Image (cartoon, rainbow, N blue to C red; front, side):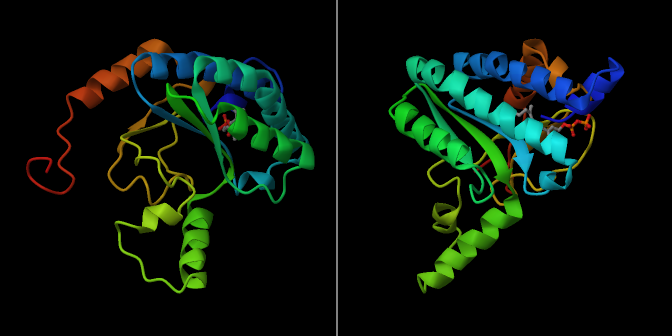
Length: 218
Ligand code: FPP
């Protein structure tokens, strides 16, 4: 969800204004995604590197996350959407940790789709923690069972990854899981990301010949 800061700056507003606007886009895009029968939506809200941002921006993002959870747990529960959080809780407040536990417990029975938010998530940290768990268990693993050790265990690999905001990089997102994702880089700043643009991406994806390294997609 890149581009919130620039969106705000263009309006001569503080970056926090862009982040607030960015949160507002989540519900609309989630409704679009689940309404089109897609079962998983994963959003990257805060990376393991985002702690390097100025303290007031970090504080603002933590408080937006807390507010998002408070407001959305009942909504997601009633819509049948499971909410999962990826990332470390080690540096989050006890209040945030209990909200995450509450969100996962209350929405866990949903059958309509899974909304996952990466917060203090890093692809490298995920892989390293998974390797260490394998070592602790004294196990050698295969490509077939390694994903069970990642935080995304039980979830399919992403078919589509969309990065808004014009930068063409992965920025430590789902590094292992994205091996064969179709990647879309959009110049649109996240607060302006529209249902129409999403539909355009889905239409393009539908006509993509995914070969997974083979010749006929098998
Ligand atoms: C990147 O844009 C965006 C982020 C680091 C934060 C994304 C977070 C939200 C949309 C709000 C948090 C939402 C939840 C649910 C916790 P940027 O700030 O780097 O923008 P820029 O590249 O224009 O500076």
